[in-house]
Amino acid sequence: MNGAAPLVEMKGVSREYPATPMPVRVLAEVDFSLNAGECAAIIGPSGCGKSTFLNILGTLDTPTGGEYRFNGRDTCELSANELAALRNRDIGFVFQLHHLLPQCTAVENVLVPALVATHPDEARARAVDLLGRVGLEHRIDARPGQLSGGERQRVAVVRALINRPALLLADEPTGSLNQEGAEKLADLLLELHRQEGMAVVIVTHAPAIAARFGRVLELRDGRLAARD
View 1 (cartoon, rainbow, N blue to C red):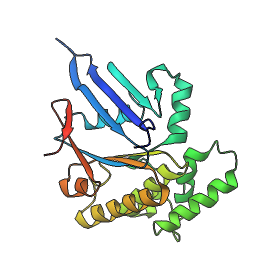
View 2: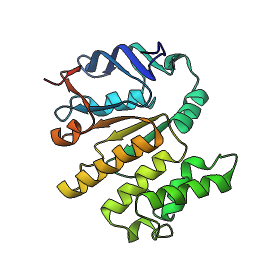
View 3: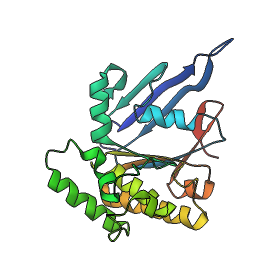
View 4: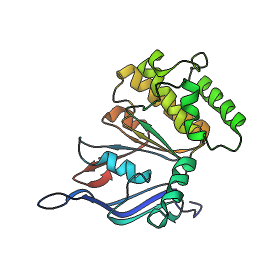
């Protein structure tokens, strides 16, 4: 260990949502940390709070108890503008539903997070390069409706990488793919992890996919623990 602070660190993080007759606790005093460049997979039954956990990691949601630090900074102390800048600069998101803009081409979809880029020509060159690295060099001008499900998911992965994030969050990215497609997407995420040097947290229902990401944790009854 070099003594550097973890990239992400949760201490006693809880998340409750208002409900009648009493609040619903989704996360219960979760502890979690991940160093820069590391991978982790989160598994657990449906409704156990995996997406809530990922949303807090990505600063899309806030804990109702405990502390979450990103790169040493307490996220609860950041303003809305500071959180938005952090998400755009340091965090990439890949969702099961890829959320591509239907009117935009593949390369235009990839460039959406880079619209505020200081050097747009460099951003476009990176987008084209990344699309080529995932086998879509001949599809950069295709719109989502012209792409297969696997191709759309690869575009979504590349979009998450355009700003060179320190952390990639993937929420059930293989859930809508068959076994072969899921394995290929896992291959892609791991290859890009090695090439880009980013930390990765993947949420998945598939134990075989989770095992490929090294460290496997299970979320159950709101608590996170190492997989037996």
